[in-house]
Image (cartoon, rainbow, N blue to C red; front, top):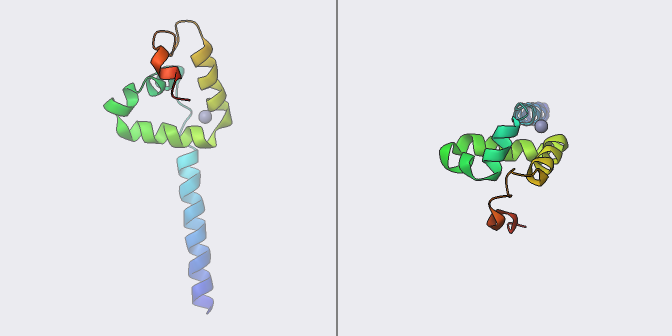
Length: 87
Ligand SMILES: [Zn+2]
């Protein structure tokens, strides 16, 4: 029984550390967010695309930055009205 509890706790800790590592993926640069939004990252670097997706899911400040980038004149979306229909 004790062994079960210990392995459950250990598994939980490993799970939490894994989440921390993914969550602490550095904040993407503005350019990276633009490429991400324009689906450039998705085709050129699927791993980075997934990491940015996961980062955005856990990082409110980067979601806000992405919103700002999309509103910026000449930014993502300005020349690609189709992209905004993703919503
Ligand atoms: Zn962030």
